[in-house]
Length: 602
Image 1 (cartoon, rainbow, N blue to C red):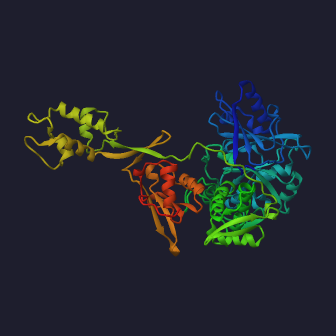
Image 2: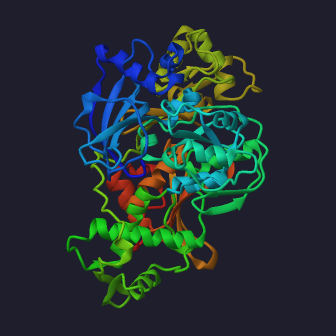
Image 3: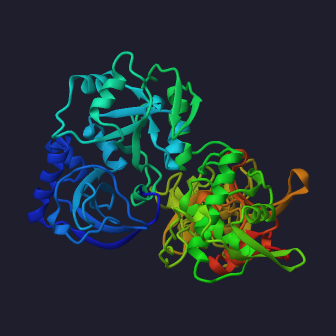
């Protein structure tokens, strides 16, 4: 339901006079929300409640009912009102749907909690079903949740068996992952209570479509928030054996609580681990074939339906990568299809009478025309252009400041000047260190009587500048600059990275520049690896997402020895990376190695 991008049209604050009415509305729909403590967890007293009016890429609807919202009479079915706390964390979403097939202007309003609200108040829905991570991944791609693919608790079975007041019952349910009490999705029931009761009764057939996904962690509504996960203790895994299905796909599953929770987070891009931490898990070859075909249709309809043909195959490929990122949690990878090469893929689409290919020159192809009446376009809607942004959202270093830290070897010097300058005390510039050294030298009267540029070392300075094992009698002269350099060398160091947005982060050890290197993999295939991003305070997953928008090739995040991560791009992309880091991101060249002589490709 919220798979397509959302654009914020306006943002307002709920008036104090309307605040109680809103909370009463929510309590009327969700009895568990009635308690003052529960309301304060979501909307604390004294803090504002924000409303965001957002527009989706296409109209959506879901069978449900909820409180009327007369203030928003102008809302259309593809517009949503999101209720957030003062930190703009979305907790409820309100929207209209056509009422029982009536005229377009006859709507009824529904209101749903987000997964953020369920993490604070998981009992908003009386019905909750558990499933396995594999099914969650299919739900993210739009599949319905099948009754055969869930585990039903005794409390839910009892509730359905004993009957529910249909006048007040909400036809929704939350979905958790087996072995965890973390709600990750909300769906609308696709069977009425009578049918559900008969199927959950002893001897009933556990089959049929149970839920249609309305909202799931990882979609665009979830992305409006801080993208956090509520920390919860895994529950003991519920006993279950049988087929687990979603959208007609079934497989056997048996997992522990810990494994279930971890695997459930991987498709959402919210948990680390694996060879591609933070990126979606791989899908089968057949599914990747279908994904390529679907993304091709959406890309052609969105970008080239207004006569912008012919288009070079390379340009089409790049546009498909961008569209694929918007419509699917899985990265497009031609190597994981049955086609293996993009040219072969286009040839197959031509043989399927979807498009025609022309030859521009040797080795260069273009899509000359498209058969818009082809069945592949039957249910495809053009995606709107993504809203323009002021620039990349990634943190880009603009400068590096060395941080000097008092350690065990230098503590006696700094402590003699100021007792507060104990081990661990930090200096953000060398000037601070110089001032302390000057104060110490003058207080001990160590300046040479014959040469003001020379210091006569005492035992404290000897231990730092020379060696603790060296003893002396009389004077041990050393120039000011040499003593100062020795003190700096013996201090521990960190580096503070200052970003272009004004923020900063302090990182341990000395600065290691980001390194770009072209490497050969199996089959003599080239990849461009980017390492040491974390040493500059940069997020490899963010860099990978930004690169995926500008490069028409596979981009992965891989774990390196020592817990660091690298970003790899298919092919020799040094020329493109030179432009990306130094022109697009305006990153100082002194922070990067390996791009001194970028290749001709990319």
